[in-house]
Length: 146
Image (spheres, rainbow, N blue to C red):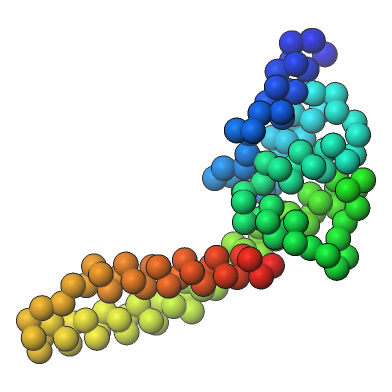
């Protein structure tokens, strides 16, 4: 392995700007595994800590709060599996929230339409924005309860 590849991988892993971003945990994990391999890091605790540090804030916070059946810091593979499962559960929850609230959106629209026919004024955009905020709050609440 070229020395500069190892140094570049270590530099990326040591930067505070290296994080999951908009990637799924699976995609982040693929990139992370490549960086770990290229860096030559072999200490399992270092690998687990670096992995958790780069995760999205909500997943990292949820993982930090685990006390029951918490994986060992010496078992990065267990941390990888747990983070992937949390991300997949969150995606499923998010889809479930949207599906459950599809009827609410229709109801809000019909209420807004009826209201506008009575007084001639309704701000449908504000109704939609308020509903979106409610959805985001529900999603964040379910994420923090994982």
